[in-house]
Image (cartoon, rainbow, N blue to C red; front, top):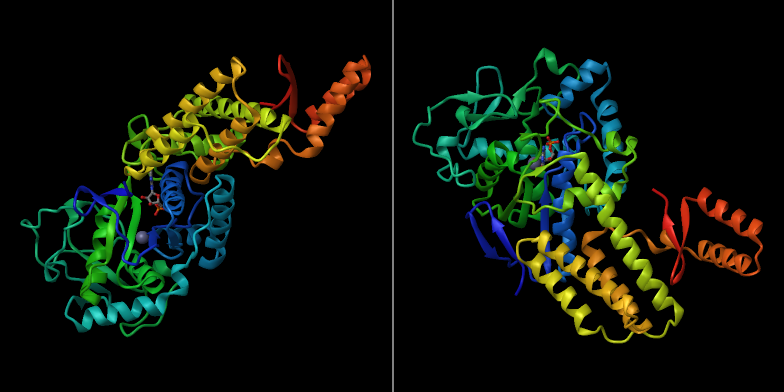
Amino acid sequence: MGFRVYNTLSRKTEDFAPLKEGEVGLYTCGPTVYNYAHIGNFRAYIFEDLLRRHLQFAGYRVNQVMNLTDVDDKTIRGAREQGLPLQDFTAIYKKAFFDDLKTLNIEPAEQYPAATDHVPEMIELIRILEEKGYAYRSEDGSVYFSIAKFKDYGKLAHLDMSGLQAGARVAQDEYEKENLADFALWKAWDEADGEVFWDSPWGRGRPGWHIECSAMSMKYLGESFDIHTGGVDNIFPHHEDEIAQSEAVTGKPFAKYWMHCAHLGVEGRKMSKSLGNFYTLRDLLDRGFTGREIRYALILTHYRQGLNFSFEALLGARAALARVDEFRSRMRSTAESDRISPAEAPDWVASALKTFSEALNDDLNISKALAALFELIHDGNKRMDIGSVTPAEAASVEACLNEMDRVLALLEPVEAALDQELLDLARQRQEARKNKNWAEADRIRDELADRGWEVQDTAEGPKLKRKN
Ligand code: AMP
Ligand code: ZN
């Protein structure tokens, strides 16, 4: 079975077939850089990372574009409040965003275009829309898209267009379905914009938010491309408007598959900056959680299911990862004890990997994929307990974990987990204990502790464990 995806456009699960064989063009709406991203935003970025990694795992070459919205209503307001030029203000949050991606082990996209570097492309699209009769100027010199002119308007959000009030207009970037109206492509300069403006055929002004994504996606991925993603809040108006603008210009289908992740909530409400109920990644790191614990907690639930944030969930993630780590090092030391070329994976290992990849092929069924991982751990531990795992089998389990981790990206890098120096220290301590040199053994234990590792003496010999 190949990859199957739930397409918001058709409201159906479809077989995935890219436009160009073996390649996937993926556009993921990126951050509005006016503040630190909150972990609700990162739920979306982690879902997209899972998608990207799974596509690669399935053998596709992925070309991912994630935009940086560095000019819109919110960034202009923020820069003004801080008394900073727009570029200086957004630079702070761009940098923070890239730092956060690293912390969460999110694989970088191929391109991160910034809106302010693509204003001429946006102006060109608006010019064509005007030429084709889809856009009109308002009294103040702004340019609006006339949704009544685009017959497919509403096809993504499945809107009922019957109550449409002709000529109603909305200037804000974000608005509700109740305010269904012509939206701004170009906003004429006003005082609140201060220094922020570009010259255009319609005078000084700035682009609307939606046209930014149409211009940047088509520039880097072509007029038609494979997958477009975001959180469900992006479906309307942002993605609906992107489709209208792009397809009105090209006359071709814009994105083939639309995938949207459900929200991360807090006590039943969407986590968002405007509600003030949000945690940034930094808030959680300050409380002692690690990037991989947070990644685990956010990746755990199927992307189309709502996910409620809680500290218990983070503690659960910590416990689950400890179990994975322990299992991995158990297999590792068995494999280590007699490292020969790994044998073919035995059935119980091969079938775990198969279940894992089939689950992800089924619209990224992560719960089932993780269940396959924990089944492998359960099974492997039982076999270890009765001493039936050979070093070659243990090595194949390790290889299986590494394969799964190409998608999950949750394992500690091996070097960090057990680098040679640490292993040597552990061995020296073992040696010292054998010779009843307790002072030396204690000294080495303290040295390991200083480096963040704890030695546990188990029936199978000493084990190194990361200190909590
Ligand atoms: P923004 O910076 O507001 O444009 O949002 C960036 C991305 O995060 C978009 O794809 C949003 O749909 C997504 N997003 C915003 N809030 C949440 C949330 N609470 N849960 C999941 N995704 C979200
Ligand atoms: Zn976008």
